[in-house]
Image 1: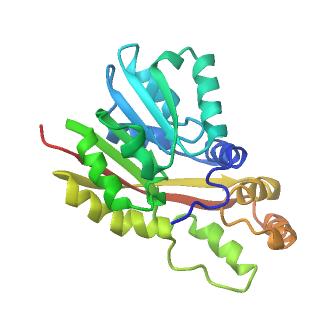
Image 2: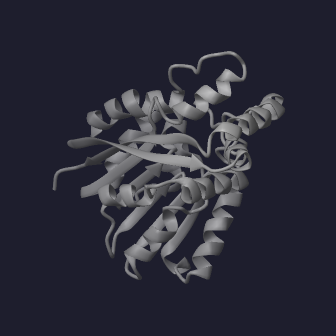
Amino acid sequence: MSPGRFDSDTAALERRLESHERFGRRDLNEWIFAHLAPAAGHRILDLGCGTGKQSIPLAETVGASGEVICLDVSAEALETVTRRSRDLGVDTRLRAVQAELDRLAEVLSGERFDRVVGSYCLYYARRPETLFAWLGDALVPGGVLFFCGPSRDNNAELKRFHYGLRGESPPPTTAGAAFMEDEGQRLTRAVFGAVEVFTFENALDFDSPEALHRYWSSYNLFDETLDEAFRDAAARHFRSHTSFKTVKRAVGVRASHPR
């Protein structure tokens, strides 16, 4: 599948992360790291790292004897990661690589990792079978792959609100959700010896029409032709409600090779 218009937009990504942190109740990183189990000395590959939400704390965790390789297609996002790593004094243990997921075998040939993490990204690979085969070879015995992405009912409340402006029902699923709940799990089981599937929910309670619009306008649902209608509908909603709730729902897949 092709990335959405905001998936490589650094400013939009920052606004979404800000909304998750300000209006959400749970921390995605805590959930990811609980299943990834990073430790001092690990070599970790962060796929689709964005602006470093996982990369920076992972660099802090692995210590001076470890290394985090963060890969993303966006040069702007990688510049943000590099700058933040310098500001926090962890730049010597972090390496930024600009490349698409389908070029992993080329840009990281022969490298091995204790941990691989992919947050909301693996479904953008054009050749996912090749990607998972490479991940199977790149992960050391006892290593862990953890990747996550949207479930079919992710942001169901916001989707109903959005599509209702058109007088439509939301589509039953998205390509990313279908990958996370079907193809991605199948490909993982074909390569790895142990596979577990987990779920995550984070309720976002927006407290104003402006906050709701700010989130929607940074999300791939955004439609410029609906902007005025969305603002009006959000204002009407808050005349009779104190908040607007939507729930970020994710699927996580943990895989490993036996030692």
